Image (cartoon, rainbow, N blue to C red; front, side, top):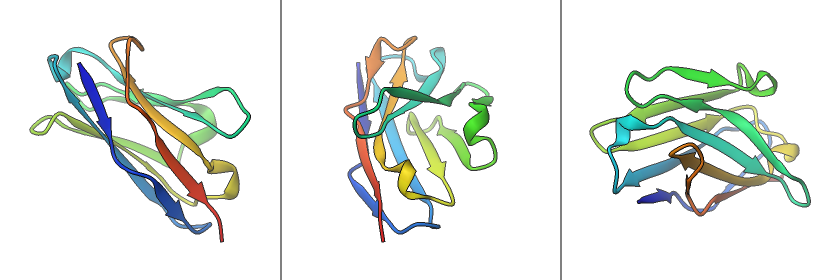
Length: 113
């Protein structure tokens, strides 16, 4: 099983970022994919999850309205888009599947002017 994430991103405050996570080695629609982030010196923070089978989503309240998850079953890829970025969004963003048994290696998103 592999979850391969897109590369490092640098964004200005107020802009948006979209990170991808491509799954392989298992049946993509069988597991939810969660998005989690870790800011420098902080613990893990859950952003929410998507069901790739039907595109159903659940967002953590803190991010509601500012984050969108999508899934492309043709490429077994899920995406997270975070808008209105601020410096506090600087973190490593991870995708996780298989009830958090499988993890991507993380994507560093830096928000700085």
